[in-house]
Amino acid sequence: MTSSFVRAALVRTIHGASTWLARITVVACFCLSLSSTGRCQDEAPGLQDLNDATTTKLSARQLQDLEKVVELCESALTKGLDDDNKTYAEDLLSATLYEECSRLCRVIFDQQPPNPQWPDIRKLCLPKLNRALELRPKMASSQLLLARLLSLPGGDRAEALVKVNQAIALLEDDPDNLSEAHLTRARLHENHDEMKKDLDVAIELNPRNFDAWRTRGLFYLSTGETEKALSDLRELLEQNPDDVVAHQFIAQAFRQLKQYDEAIEHLDKITENDPNALVAFELRARIAEERGDLDAAIDNLNQAIRINPRYLNGILSRARLRLAQEQMDLAQSDINRALQLQPGLPQAILLRSLVYAAQNRFGEAIGDLQQLLRRSENENAAGVADIKLQMGTYYELDQRPRKAIETYTEILTATPDFQPALRRRGDAYLSVGKHAEAIQDYEAAMKLTPDDPGILNNLAWVLATSPRDEVRDGKRAIEIAQKACDLTEFKLPHMISTLAAAYAETGNFDEAIKWSEKAVSDDTEEQLSKELESYREKKAWRELQELQENPAALNLPNAANSNELPNFDLDKPQPVPVDDPAEPLR
Image 1 (tube, rainbow, N blue to C red):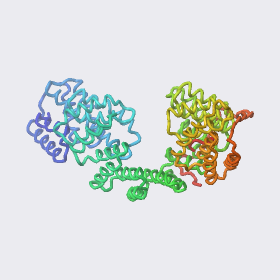
Image 2 (cartoon, helix red, strand yellow):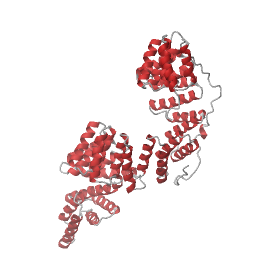
Image 3 (tube, rainbow, N blue to C red):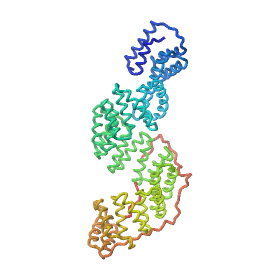
Image 4 (cartoon, rainbow, N blue to C red):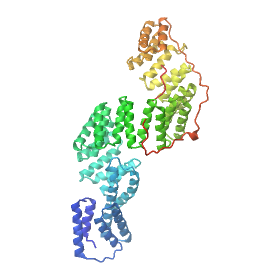
């Protein structure tokens, strides 16, 4: 039978001092114990299982060994033990459950990126840790590990906070683990001040808690405190020059500052250590796009997708860039690929609708949005409003302004203060000659966003040029048009021409000619020249659009066939070969 001295040493070992020297000490004590005590007889039915559990734990190397210890301990407790042996069995069981989960969770918390099967690992560990805490509620290490698992996506934030607070209360004499506990709690906070406080404490307790430095650096990036972020991340690199995440976050910080060359230097550091670091190519692609070099952006995405042919975000980003370059077939190919990877993906369907719209295939574009609406019935009103807003834009582009007005009205019935819908409906009203209604929508939109130059310009235009006497107001048109020009630094000819029209409406043709000449000098559009000619003849400009509805039937796709896709091998690299499409009315 194993002596109480050996058992006490073993429990201390597996609860904390799991070094090679401690293990050797326990084994030696165990051997001495056997030689001096022999096989003592004991009538407790579970004692043999407990002794076997102890022996197995001393030689445990694999997870299967730890699982065997757990099985034997549970068996011993079920069969029955005296009080002392029961206490020891519970200690051994709770500690072994923690050790087993700790080993399993290394692929979640100690590697980047985490093992993709981490949700299954969490599912396996949660009941084990809860059992450990059922036996020993004050076991801080189990409280902390459970909190970390619960804090992951799809976990239980409220319960995680309870567990981490309990761990913090128990870890006063363990600064390293206390640092980890404060870091875990920081990630659970929704309040920025509370988050920052815990991050500061985590770093103060353990300045070599690299994850805390990374997290605080990312926190500063998210709050726009870029210089503070750089300071933290540089400190991290001084301690660990090859820290990939630090280089990544520093590159992101320099990108925010638009210091792109410095950002690229840190991305190069990442690929020097790992030529297949996908994140480096992703960030290079974003930087290239921001620099206006779409070819370079696509080249970097090509490399990222070669590394991971299932890189969904990269495939969608490349499709978007190919759309911007009017490479419609290639964009469509990427979208099909994304939908094969994840059927029904809303981002891919929306992007496909943009490709259809760019090809004037508005029926198919609208059909895609209708598909999204059918899937969004239970989502928030804002998401539905965005889809309907895009649909209304497609109706306008397809010369169906009255259908667009109907769609925008649906949005505004549900969300009356949705500014983009007010703006778009005002434009649509203007295009069919409903000036009073257009003015009403522009006024409402202007109250929500008083410094939107597009809204100001279109309102000023209709106030200055409407053939309907009851809606014109030249003096107010000058005031509003002047503000629109100020906001755009007098750089947009169509807004300058609106200011000219406003002056003409008040009879101040000298000012009208001055501003109209400037507009014409900046843009050769024929209408601007005609406006100038009118002012020289002392005539105010009048405009009435009465766009007729497109009489052709809208060619909507068959919903049953809307997701038919070509087949190809997703694991093989593939051959590499707008925002709002609506133009302003003025």
